[in-house]
Image 1: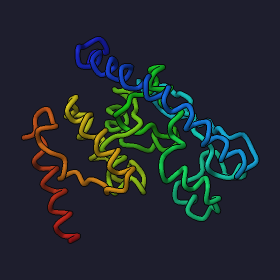
Image 2 (image 1 turned 90 degrees about the vertical axis):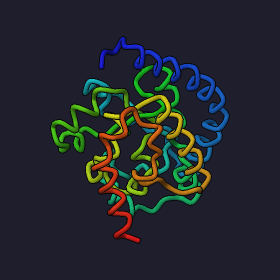
Image 3 (image 1 turned 135 degrees about the vertical axis):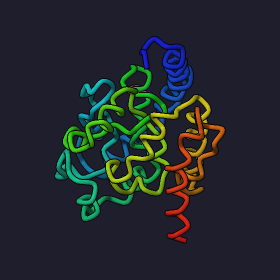
Length: 223
């Protein structure tokens, strides 16, 4: 999709219209979160990570630090399960308050409010080439289908259908629905399986029936 197409420009306008007020409103919260991190971890309360973004370019993601400074910069998600985390910063992590500084990346254009989660280069390079190329066609997002799914506890590459379907069928309706479900998830209202996404949110629902049907069958088998 052309970067100057109406849908792309509209999405960028929405990111600015919503992202800038949110970024400004989040400043006091980020300040408190940074203070909590500083007291709990006794080190720089901000953490910078390099991730793969739009067109495959690497950019810097900023978070409030929630892990001890002895934790490796690019440690595996599963390895973090054995890491002892102070209760205060664990709460920041569970409420996703550590992600709030990334609102300024939305304003700056490196990220979008909704899109595929930016991945570390080492994991991105292990993706199927077509999937990796597809993800790089849009700006990565603060939240997305994978992020609100129950599979977000694992790795993106283990359940690529969430990002693939979003990237192929995205609409402004889907973005709004994902944003709404993200708020519900933060409030403890649960995650969303692929088959639970309403068909009206997609651009051309019939193309999704086989994949969504498989996901529905998978859920039925698990029940």
